[in-house]
Amino acid sequence: GDVFTYDPGFTSTAACESTITFIDGEKGELLHRGYPIDQLAAKSHYLEVCYLLLYGELPTAEQLENFEFTITHHTMLHEQMQYFFRGFRRDAHPMAVMVGVVGAMAAFYHDSTDISDPHQREIASHRLIAKMPTIAAWAYKYSIGQPFVYPRNDLTYAENFLHMCFAVPAAEYKVDPILSRAMDRIFTLHADHEQNASTSTVRLASSSGANPFACIAAGIACLWGPAHGGANQACLEMLKEIGTPDRIPEYIARAKDKEDPFRLMGFGHRVYKNFDPRATVMKQSADEVLDLLGVENNPILATAKELEKQALEDPYFHDKKLFPNVDFYSGIILEAMGFPTSMFTPIFALSRTVGWVSQWKEQLADPTMKIGRPRQLYTGAPFRDYVEVEDR
Ligand code: CMC
Image: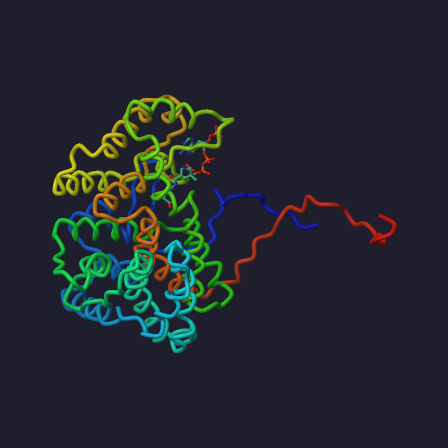
């Protein structure tokens, strides 16, 4: 029969060519269109990085202004889409709501489901990037029983998201610039990460010609898992469970114990075998936000810092090259900002939408694109004849 390369987890299989993101896991380097993530995090901002990922070059001032105008003017959701939110149980996880509502966009924005039209592909990408914060914020508002807050075109992308999450009709809400900067940085640091599980899911879904909303909904579903985007929620829950620094050795011992399925959440990465460059920036942001909010003595941060120190000094983590990843610090920032843990993964999803969309567009424009169809090594029963039920 046919001979296949057996590569479970695709640890050594390249499934596409891409010009978007480059990662050198040994060096701990992450480049978007050639630009290093630390420079982008320090000097750029999310919508500019979105433009870079989508179009390949940094925008001119005029291109940026036009792009920001376009995105800001696609932030409204069709009013009827509120029925989808209202149909969920009020304690539904916001990721469940996002998977459903984003998939349902195909039923509202029919025009953008025509993937053969480059203009419609463009509009679909703008709609997804623009509406995702509204969808995430509304999933949150619904879960806490507050009225939906409509997007505002005069705010930046990050300010608008914070506004839709935290404003209430009865009171004035002003976004602190340090918080909106930290929010923007979280979006920027999660914008793309080459062929991770959710991005590969989007590409595989799209390889069949599925519409963009279905493909991105598939990406959101994949991201939800605790080994991927769900790690930020799992990490904060772990830090809360540990509670105080004196209990850390017990948890480190558990993480090292092969009989115990427990892993240190927020540690380790398939590609980075060195410090995750995003974690370095995220750590600085965490310090800034906690200083602003006056919670320097936050027991969760104290536990996180001590855990990081003890794990990095431990030969087990050292030898296996397990370093803190981006999710380790993002959770602390989001917690300090007032987000419940259930919103951590939705925030990752909205940030990653531009990466998914950029890769989706790149794939559709690739003339060598084929339907994704992995093979298998069959290990089941060999040929055998059917046995009548009374003879079994
Ligand atoms: N705690 C304890 N041991 C670990 C951990 C951890 N967090 N991560 C990996 N190991 C061990 C693992 O037991 C294995 O040991 P051995 O070789 O003795 O069997 C070795 O390190 C290699 O692990 P692996 O599972 O084969 O590596 P992988 O590349 O398949 O997994 C990972 C990568 C991220 C799924 C894994 O490190 C993990 O589960 N980490 C915790 C969850 C997490 O933080 N995920 C977020 C990833 S970054 C953001 C994102 O992708 O969304």
